Structures are given as structure tokens and as C-alpha cells.
Image (cartoon, one colour):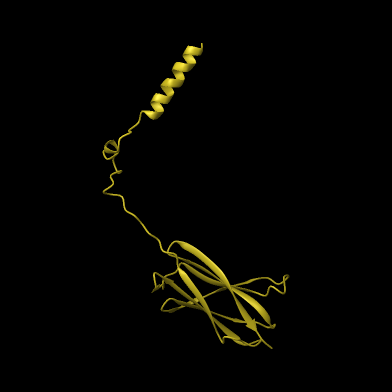
Length: 143
């Protein structure tokens, strides 16, 4: 009985390992030629935030500018650009997600009014070039 199990095991291994083993044999498979394979290199978007005015007062309209580039070229066709705004000193307060409008040259803009002074966090959420990137920056709102 042990001889049969050993024979079955050896035959199974021979079948599993018996496929093409040489690099030359792989070229003959349909669709697997190295000449047809291409390399795709995706660059991560680079994003920066700026605010107008830079140091806003409560109740003042704040323009949030999200500048998106890939390989130092402006991205005007991002899949999605949003900003998230919240005040970490007020944990019960919900985070606001605000859509942006493309204004050209890789810049997307959103407007917000904040009714309390404090150090807010503004996080961009950018989906472009097959990647999602996000990062937060501090925005100080004064009396």
C-alpha cells in the first residue's frame, strides 16, 4: 500500500512540475511573447494646498486651492478632487467634505466659511493618474 501512495505522489509531482520549464518554450505560448509585453509606469500625483486669504477671519469666505501635478505637468483631468475641513479641538463636530471646481492649470478650488476661530485641518483627497493621495494642512482662523 505504501508503494502505491509513493507512486501516486511521484506521478502528481511529475505532472505539476512537468509544464514548460525553458524560457524558449514560453515564447511559443499565445499572447505571452516578451515582444508584446509593455511596461507601464504610473507617477504619483503631487499636490499642494494654498488658501486665500492666507490667514482668514471668522465668517470670511476662504478659497482653498488644490494644485495637482504629475511629473511637473498640471493635471486638469483628475477623477476626483475634494477637501475635508474640521477643527480637531471640537471632536464632536463633523468633518465637512467639499467638492472643488477645476479652474485650470492643474488648480481646483473650493470655498468655505468658518464661523469659529481656531486651528482647522484641511485635507485634500485627490484621485488622479490611477492613484488616491491625501494629506492635511493647518489653517488658522482668527477673530
